[in-house]
Amino acid sequence: MPAKYSLSTKLVSIGAVLLVVALTSICLTLWVTWQLEGGAAAVNEAGRMRMQTWRLASMAQSSESPTVVAELVAQFDQSLELLKTGDASRPLFMPINDKVNQRFLAVQSLWAANRGMWLLETPPDGAQSLAATAQTVEAVDGLVLAIEQQLSKLTAILNLFQFVMMALAIAGAVIMLYTGYLYVINPLGNLQQGLQSIQGGDFSARVEVDTQDEFGQVARGFNGMATELQSLYTGLEAQVQAKTQHIEAQRARLATLYEISAFSASASSIEELSRGFAQRVRTVMQADAVAVRWSDDANQRYLMLASDCLPQDLVESERSMLAGACACGSLRADARTRVIPILSHEASPMRNCARAGYESLVSVPVRLQQRLLGEIDLFFRSTVQLTAEEGDLLDALASHLASGLESLRAAALEREAAVGEERALLARELHDSIAQSLAFLKIQVQLLRSASQKADGQKVRTALDELDTGLRESINDVRELLLHFRTRTNTVDIEAALQETLQKFKHQTGLPTHFQVSGEGLPLPADVQVQVLHVVQEALSNVRKHAQASQVVLEVSKG
Image (cartoon, rainbow, N blue to C red):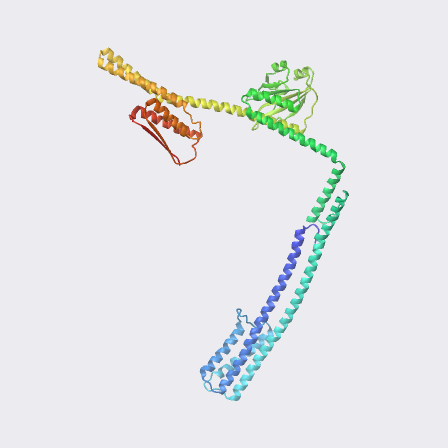
């Protein structure tokens, strides 16, 4: 078998061939056995036909009744039909052979010629019946002999198949042993010798690879391992030191990222975040100075958010800078972290940096979701070269800075939205309560003025009473509004806020209150709790104004 096939393919192919040969031999043996069983049953049935023939002759001599003779004739007919059609359930059938077919046709034709003689009302004489019987028996004997000869051939074939199966078993065992030695034992022996050589300190030992199967792959892997071990053994100390330095650098980078991430999450303002970020980045990268610049939405102007160790005159001159005025503010949308040499001639846009003694600038773009937000500038007083790991670290730090600033901006927007929501809520409450009361007071003032002009004392007193009632209602509305805004759902569940609202209502109105809670369930979301609390507060306000109730009961059903 070609060496390019895998070990499993080779073993499966050999096993499949042996299995097919074995199954074929078994099927042929079963077929021959089936033929022998069917032929033996056919011999028995033919012998039964002989006996039936002699019984017919005997009954004809003894003048038996025609009914008994007819039954024997019918039995003979059934035997002929059974031999002709066979019976797979027994099994019973004649072997497939020309000689057997000829003998059976001879018996069938002879019986067709003599059958009518046995059914005559007048039985045949002795000589005639004996002659017919002898002919029939002789024909049946010939059929039996032909079947037995065919069965003898089948028996010889069966014995041959058995010998062939024995030979196949021996050949299969030899093939499997040879295959196991060739494809498994021999490669394992070679690998074992190689392992023993490696264990003995001979790292130059190699295993011959002459196949493409699994053991060939293992041998190639072993050779690669031996080469690596030989290389490690010869320069182990230097490699260990290099690997240790690499791991230490990775650890330092991870620690830096963790520190920056924790600081970004804890910073409370943009100034604090940018200033602390600049200090930490300068320390990590061992730069001489750092500047954090932020751009407007159009990336036309850069504002210096923070700096560290940058000369004050340079900070003042570059606090706000147009894009393109210097190499620091000339980022494009596809810009990457880069090292820019600082030239000292007067025409250079970086002459201020050169006068400050800087020789190299590292520009790191700050992006958030593919949007350019600003840049981080690292100044060095010597020529620097960034490694790929350092570039990746700076990009990750810039990403943390962008995320932190965006989080602060989102928090500010959230606070602004909360203030706006409070203002809108206050406006709705003022409109629903105090504005209506003031409109009522305005109407009463107009009625009072009209009654005064008419000198109607009764209407004047009525208007004054209404004004007094309206003022009390307005005072109560203001007090209730203040109480409502002091009540918040700061707890996990709304029960405490509802209980506090009822206590304030009781203190304000003097009405007894009852609070009942039943059932169990999960707490409502915070926004739903606020809405429920406002609904309850509005209901209590309506009770105070219009219900004239003697007590208030609040029932909460969880579920």
